[in-house]
Length: 438
Image 1 (cartoon, one colour):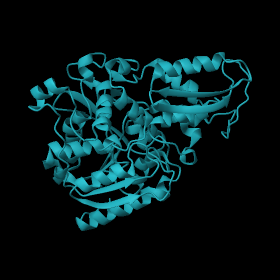
Image 2 (cartoon, rainbow, N blue to C red):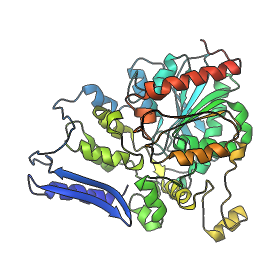
Image 3 (cartoon, rainbow, N blue to C red):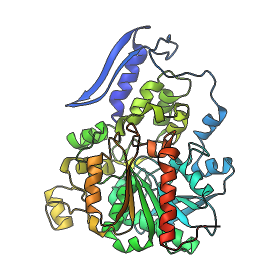
């Protein structure tokens, strides 16, 4: 979360005496970010003595190294699937990249990634372990979105991503501009009237916003499946989001990017790979850093794939976007960005931001959630369920440790969740008399 303190942590780790043992904890206010007991790892030539259950391999699979650097398009192409790049320009000038695993003539399904993520999340675990590939094998035409500000959608018709004006957005604009334009493009390209929508985390947030602000788009949705659905954060356990809610000064956010949150520059890429490289004994610490925002489930994490994960994430977000999540946590309401009472009155004609109109989200919705999800806590998902008018299915994953990222990266995600999702998709296609055969 806070890059500078963590850099200090790594520096202290490197300078610690060989064979030393220590307890480290990072605490901000009343928030404990992590607490570790470790012996000094081998960094910069130091000796290794670590109390860890992580298996360290001396040789790294070349495929893992390669996949950590390949784009979504090249990942799909590498594994023998039909890959396509598409470009969409929003009404406010952002140029977005869509990736496609093309099955022409088949029912389209749109996959929308979560916070700090990209289209790569659906395929980077490889065939048989990526939901994008599975949907293609099941006969679907798979489209993967990239919202503004991430690795693949950093262009604008007027601004560059080095300009502050480029980053003046939150997830509100994604729901109002990015997702509607993406849906229109897919339906125009495929000549279908409706599509399946699968969103993870923030990918569900932007759908609720689209339904709230542009309810006419609900007629274009065959079936919406929400993985780790987020709207209310009243019971959120994420140290990152809770920190943003507790400490919401601009100074704090400037520690990790004035306009772009966690900027994906060469230093951060190198820093992540230092922590998470396959041969590095710090994988245990790396796991904690990656999952600080989401919860922990070591059994569902394929640790061998961590170099691939950090090669593609974080993929970019705006500082304002992260502030908005903190505001939702602090207020307990799912509402638009809070500019302060004076600017709110100017923008909204009210001193408080307007709440999103979830009653407008009339598409058929399935909610999938878990006990160990720090962001989408069951109590908050139930609050969302009560507000949505057309929830046709809801499912608590039958695995207590299942967490926020297990919905897309979990080792057993197919058996625990995805097969059930496919059955729901087929059932709703039958109800709508849709033939998905190619």
